[in-house]
Amino acid sequence: MSFSRSSAQALKQAVKFAAPASRQVARRSVSVLARQAPKAAMGANLGAVRGVKTLDFAGTKEVVYERADWPLDKLQDYFKNDTLAMIGYGSQGHGQSLNARDNGLNVIVGVRKGGESWKQAQEDGWVPGETLFDIPEAINKGTIIMNLLSDAAQSQTWPEIAPLITKGKTLYFSHGFSVVYKDDTHVIPPKDVDVILVAPKGSGRTVRTLFLEGRGINSSVAVYQDVTGKATEKAVGIAIAVGSGYCYETTFEKEVFSDLYGERGVLMGGIQGMFLAQYEVLRKNGHSPSEAFNETVEEATQSLFPLIGKYGMDYMYNACSTTARRGALDWAPKFRDANLPVFEALYKSVKDGSETRRSLEFNGRKTYREDLQKELDEIDNQEIWRAGKTVRALRPDSGKDEL
Ligand SMILES: NC(=O)c1ccc[n+]([C@@H]2O[C@H](COP(=O)([O-])OP(=O)(O)OC[C@H]3O[C@@H](n4cnc5c(N)ncnc54)[C@H](OP(=O)(O)O)[C@@H]3O)[C@@H](O)[C@H]2O)c1
Image (cartoon, rainbow, N blue to C red):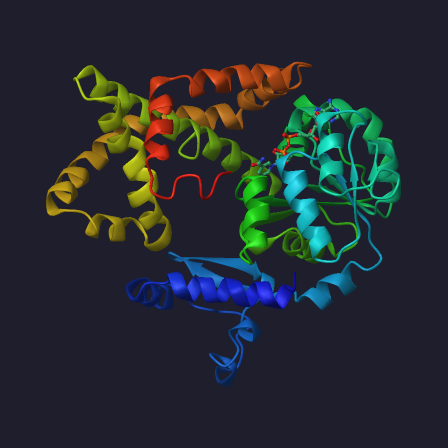
């Protein structure tokens, strides 16, 4: 896939989806403050004016980096002497390594032999002895060591991995977890290497599918240790190489706190709990499973949440009836107040390391895959999600976009 083509597609996509109202909002709120291109260039070639810039995010100025700043030839030239060693082949390892490979970078994969990942990597075209190695061999061959083992495995394998991270290599993570919670993980990077982070804000599967669609995931980038003075540009370059559309700056600590908090909250745990509570009350009051599911999940995911995603919360409200608007406006503060203490407790549990210790203990078990699967099967068996299968099968486009 050509890089410029994917940028152009992304642009086309953005223009296609932008409603007139949202374009005006975007024009009003985004003020480019740094590295602004001459006015004449604007409009003629949007790619040329995009790049590193400081944007105004609701009154706070932040630096962002865009894919347009790293055309494919620059990316390939920058990393021409590097070998990206992808250690681990879970959902992030899969998405990031395939994207970097498709972008023409020199990528190898390192996983334990005989495991699930070894099998999956081969299915994706990584060849044992050529581009697929066991972990120590891949680290020895790599210059940029991308540690994308599970967070628990990063801690368990660190005693064997640490001596192989020699001077001149770069150590890369997609989560601040191991380094920030070093008292629990014992992951302490060697002093003489750059240590960088690119954290895609989505699942590894999305990292791959957005890239294949010519779009890009948003990622945060951070530098923990800058020995060469080039750690930031390296992090941004890799972020683009693995499929990011744009990246914003953070620190290892801020990344891990916000990430652990977000996934336990609204992104996963919070929404699961809220869906279930709403569904249960409807069922207790005599509503059928199809009605309870449609009023809780289907309308949210198929109609209202995509509107929030595309145009914002106020747009979603405006798309609904005045009856709905009045009631939702009245109840939103009650939900906020009820949830606030739970979110406060969650952030504290993240910050004091409780969430990390729980994760290290559970995901460090030999049976971690089976244990997790058992709990996921229980969810799958809940009435709400069984009802969901029937509802989804009734969609006219059912089966056309199976995962
Ligand atoms: N998934 C996401 O949505 C996401 C998003 C952003 C950042 N991240 C971060 O990206 C990193 C990777 O996450 P992930 O979800 O892609 O992977 P994951 O599912 O958490 O980890 C899977 C990988 O770890 C390996 N592994 C597990 N235990 C091992 C052990 N004891 N020894 C050697 N290898 C072991 C697995 O190999 P086997 O198959 O051999 O078991 C597999 O390759 C993490 O730091 C995560 O926090 C993830």
